[in-house]
Image (tube, rainbow, N blue to C red; front, side):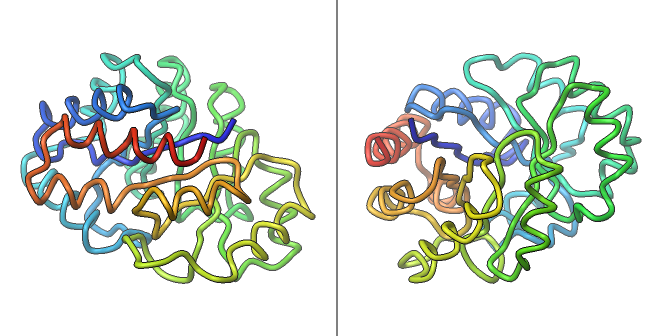
Length: 242
């Protein structure tokens, strides 16, 4: 079955509102949710997620808040999405051990190169919490094979060259990219970056194992969408990919 993973920023629009969004996504049929821990320099994120992260940081959102929220939310599996610097600040073994104790589904660290992930991989194995690595269209075949070897869960395929953000259409070379990655790994492939509509999600699901949607969902919240409207939006995506 194809899987849908929405993305929600911790503490946006508020801490309480964030939990309402998590519940709306779960009720709408999400198979798991990426909970983004706000960071001041989110290299992989576009303007929408940057803005939501900045608002959350200004309101005082912290990594400990992410763990507290995850502890109280059990409707669907949660993945933390964060960056190397916050994990280093928290202490990688401590961060991953706590994530493992809470039974998180995984941790996504976009700026963690697989070539330099040795200590993180050791800590993640000890904690029983998989790291999710990103693979972009610019990756060489050798790097794709490396990502496949170090991955214990699915692989996050970046659908385009650039940062996150809704796009008018999916890249024309996405199918070729997914097929190229499949030649080098048997791990499940989830595609994110630029997906915003049910039609786009359905096209991506034709070639991928999962679909990740973040900026489009958060933009709706920025525009005043209620949790009920977000639930309906997520449901439309879930139905499209199945």
